Length: 108
Image (cartoon, rainbow, N blue to C red; front, side, top):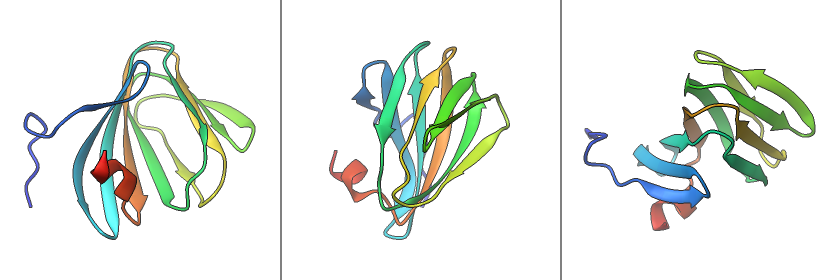
């Protein structure tokens, strides 16, 4: 399956944050998440494994209370059910990969 970014719907996720599903099947999903400066991806948990790649911008990531700043080219791994979130220190975008796929993103 080919997914063209220009044709994939972009939906609001949180204030100043949009989400674009770039491909998925039941076992795997890739999503671009775009942030305005100072936008917050609030602390949350989910049963999925997640790897996030910083496409552009700088972000303060919070993983189970431990905070670190990541820049373009950096990535992080989130185990299932671990609280995590991010704050955009500048405008930017993340590429999130989930296994299994986030069916809640498909319904949205």
